[in-house]
Amino acid sequence: QSALTQPPSASGSPGQSVTISCTGTSSDVGAYNYVSWYRQYPGKAPKLIIYEVTERPSGVPDRFSGSKSGNTASLTVSGLQADDEADYYCSSYAGSNIGVFGTGTKVTVL
Amino acid sequence: EVQLVESGGGLVQSGRSVRLSCAASGFTFREYAMHWVRQGPGKGLEWVSGITWNSDTKGYADSVRGRFIISRDNAKNSLYLQMDSLRTEDTAFYYCARDKPGTYLPDYWGQGTLVTVSS
Image (cartoon, rainbow over all chains, first blue to last red):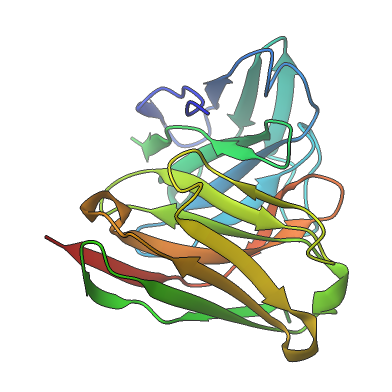
């Protein structure tokens, strides 16, 4: 149960796009289409923004999109806005009723 | 509105026990699997444990297996985490979270309760 690997930081200017990778193994990300992404502001609880690799919950803008190739999932935030500055975490089902989270990425809007 | 309210956190000595509770409202609790996720101070999220709607299946992270027990009481709309043999590395905010059906992963989260384990 090793944590999924994310880059520690990512940044972009307002209006630009930023993509965050999430690398796991053939036992988690590569094995299941159960990858979720969460946004977390400091001192707050995480909020679900993507589930099942590409699906957006109701109310999440289509600026947020997800994808997966092999053992790596990705989150793209398009049209960066100031309030996109937050920590982002991926997570994956790892089989046997086990979940695993990514190491987290701090997104900075320049 | 989905609400999850954790309680039971506090300061505890290494080796002792704590029981966390999570009161759920705003949805039909008995129909959903549930999770506990923790976050150490300044650290990332760590999935701790999950339980199916009927308590039939439970999962644990390697770091807590054998020390923590997850349970639920559907009649009381409540989720629990019994934490035994606590270690300083268990210090964290503990979040109760509802399962997104079919994904085995959380959707809605509570605000968390802080457990501090002292040596």
